[in-house]
Image (tube, rainbow, N blue to C red; front, side, top):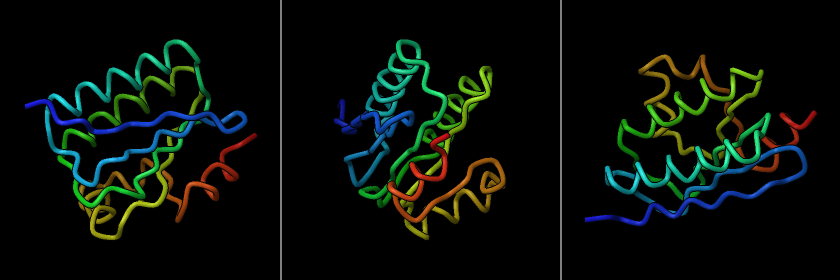
Length: 119
């Protein structure tokens, strides 16, 4: 069953913000659809900085980590950066356990993330 992940992509100055609107991101088809939507946005707009806002998210499957890494690799080809904002402490532990906390920068909220990465 295709679960709507609810990805909202906005642009705040030079920074793209990808906000997940679902509290649980675990449906394979939904994650695949969200990844496609984000990739198409990147291909069309070539943002240098993307903030992934996890404020609404309480749970996500490990597939989300793969999506984040793929998008990070895509942006790195032109010196772009992916950062994460408003992730709850339990989900942040997943990044620590997998050592991905050294790959991404984390910010307490979307606003501070946008300010930090804006050129």
